[in-house]
Length: 201
Image (cartoon, rainbow, N blue to C red):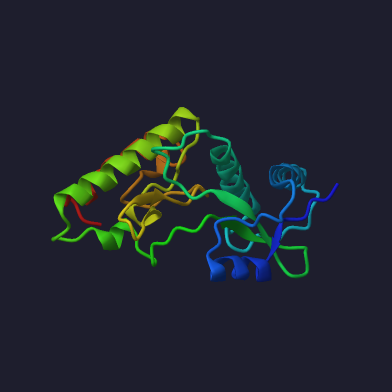
């Protein structure tokens, strides 16, 4: 059984350099994801997790993205979709996930919400984050680190939820509620307040 991730770092850079939405030559993507998960959980691989800090967080992120990929919701679910896993050039280290490209020029809600932001944009972002989180919770998926910095705003002024690696950020979600639906709801409330301009972080 081949447990190797799908893409090397070089392929990852090529993907983002061309901003392709898919890499069609990759065979049996979901099967390889599931095989890789099994290997990680069984500790059968010599995996060096560099981007997520530890194997547990990497598994959390990978599991969440796989579950999101299985959802059939077309409208109202604004999250990047998993395309592959990125490995080191030597084939023995796990670098992170390859996700669909969100053309946002590095902009998050933290930078997008300003004093002169129109009311209709504020309402759109709030509605999109609320709708996305509702669909995630209905599928049993917890966001975790709910905060304005984990919401991208693309060039069309649409909001996208990112970062399912777990954890929490003080001021957005209380420690004892981290990793729970209750924590997500708390973070969502503070995000909506931030969008409306009622609070600052």
